[in-house]
Image (cartoon, rainbow, N blue to C red; front, top):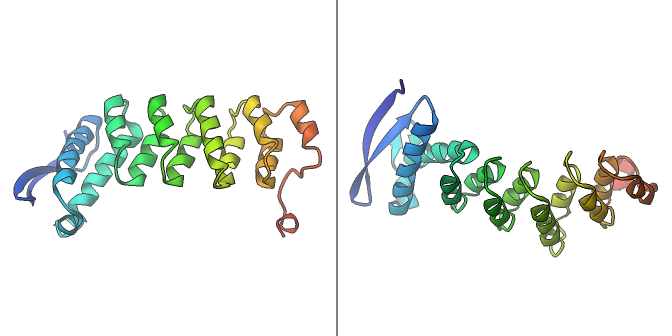
Length: 203
């Protein structure tokens, strides 16, 4: 049985019931997440920081609920809602959720925050087309780190490794060379590339 401590807090002239959850389960998280949607639509940051409950602000409590939900829920509609959250940590949790639909992952692959895009690159659910999208979008800003992440994926397909083997960054080429999915043709192309980057090479 969940232990709930029910408290009322004033939010923008109205009262919202906040259930502080001590033992989390899907239904409890969903309940607080619904409250979060109401609360964040009505409260400004100056007021939320002043509402302290048991050492945590209301914003902290709702963040915990939304983060856990974003990371583990199987409900596509909830993931869709949370994927538009203003906090990049919530969007990153959606990007890490293996239950996230491909259309959500595709949207998050275009997120302005690099941590969200990197998380999409790490999700086992991310399709080849989305990985290609991430690679293409990383080129203008020379964000080679995301290409290195993709090259290090254990399930990275050979067609993507072929593309990344032509990368201008040594770190990416090293990752491709060390990927077990790289074909003999790729390995032959990268025969002059070291298997690891030493301090001397970096200098």
